[in-house]
Length: 218
Image 1 (cartoon, rainbow, N blue to C red):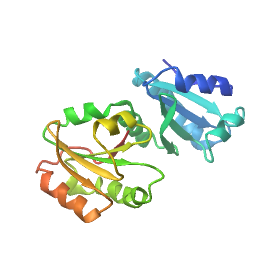
Image 2: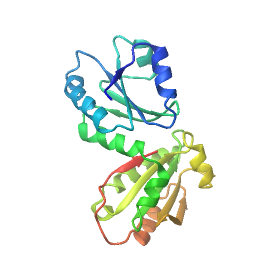
Image 3: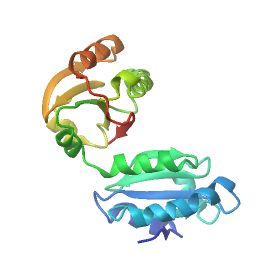
Image 4: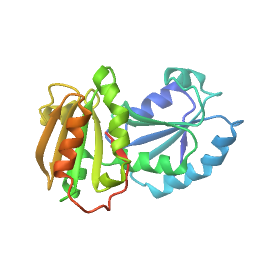
């Protein structure tokens, strides 16, 4: 489908809202930026590969109003939107990381839980303003890269941006970690207790080690 340039703030505002729950990925770039020029053809290729995702781009020099509103401070920066809300961001020209972000953000949480079958799914329900969430967040990310947990699927849900999911999961405090297997919740940890979190992962993780080690964001 190609990459659509957004030339005005009105075009940007329309682009992030009109596609509803469809993932919109926006490349903030500058023509003089070497890494931007490097990743640009790859971004174009991804727009052909991911037909269910909308790809846009904003020239930060030509559309400074949008860039300032989106707090862009480095290029390239890729922002991810659903239902008019920013759900994720990636800074830098890493093709691999960009593909991972697209893959993770275009999927739905329920789908991951159901497709995981016998694999353990650990979900971190958090908010950006929650101190304990910010404290445990990097540790949760590190756990997703531990080789012995390569059979575990690590997910993150921003409760402010996904209130429907949070309500369905009865989230009343942050952070809350929920554990799923075969589509069913098997355990829960409330609070930023790394020792307890590891203990519950060990309890349910199983033995096979076949899932790619990365954390998915919702």
